[in-house]
Image 1: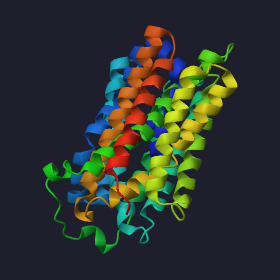
Image 2: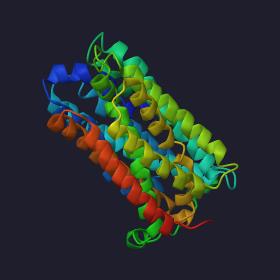
Image 3: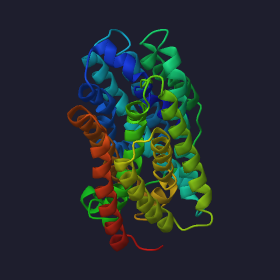
Image 4: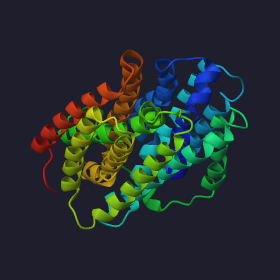
Length: 369
């Protein structure tokens, strides 16, 4: 699920130049296509938790994979931007259903005190799936633009067949008594951890979307398609960061990892605002991918401890909702800055201010376990 989710979510950026030429659109217009999935993915997070609690893990994941398959196969039919946006919206329903349910499943069945570690491993495989998209899709679109959609669409189908044979422990059908949504929204830790994850997941997805174009701005003689390897490298760093973050949780407290990563991201964003040397830009982007990923398990470990398991899917959904709103807004913001100013630097200035604000709020709100 992690590999497939990463491949599906990041299938558009590696084919960015080809799709812009196919649809005849600007950076701002193509950013709408890039972010379309995240609108439904984000808005569905809280309902997804409720749906998963009602219908169970296996059935919810089968529904999600069906949406992911159909949403990718529809835009492969004809070269239409509107149809492509519709397809990404449908795909977002599928990704939105799957993410929270898998995260709750891990929280329920991971060994005691190791929730964040196993959630990091799941998140790490997501990033490795994103890396796979950057490695493979630029090659298959050379055969035909349709493969930017066909590849993630077809990759969901084997998982549907596998899920029909999934046998879950009896624990997953236990009666639960979740808190009302209004009380979930009053949990201050949820808001702050959502802000942290919006800067982490949101920055990672934004960089994943724009890394080839960002490198093309400073690396003369190359276009975004030729620099797609930069996106693959960043996703590899992100995946390794999430995996190592899970191991770090065996020795370091989740709170220290969460706070430290946001402070370091703040410094990286500030540096990216000033730097234009190609090698330094690449190094800083990879550092941003690392610090935005190493805290994945720590943040969701803290979320998992902020409420009872009966209400966990809903709180997870709320935090992921905030994170995906960050991914949407940052992706659109970077596209807007590029069109208006000719540079992505303004986006990094905004992220610096936001990360500094988030850290100050986190120091006041988040308490040691």
